[in-house]
Image (cartoon, rainbow, N blue to C red; front, side):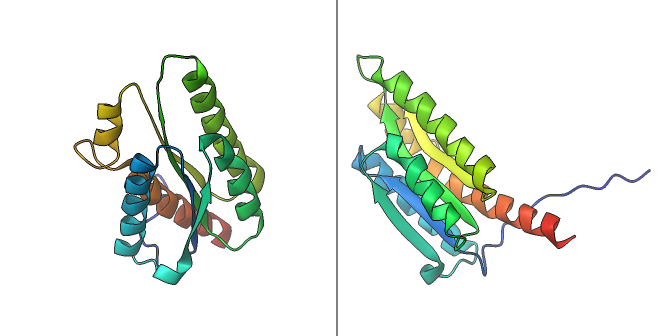
Length: 158
């Protein structure tokens, strides 16, 4: 018996994307944004189909992502930012609540909303994950958004 496999492809052509970016830890989030924009354009998105929304920090990503998703103008939303562990429990609270809230946006709106926030223990890890040595989490999040948007489009097409 042949199995049926459903998966999205990496073609962003004709799709609109919202990038919600935290200004906190701007050194890292700007690199994540650059990686996401480059990925979308390299996979066929038109520059005018990519819009950037800036928020103060990772905690504010989900609210703006939800409002943007609810407009119905975007095929996917990508949330970008960086949370670096400090010497207080603040890191754990912000990182887990940001991840949980962004995930909830996807489920509540039906619009793929991808968590492209790096959460690291050190500045060095953040440098690596925002494009230096360990790839660029912004680009990875953009690829996940493209693929998921295409998969959902294929499911609704029949």
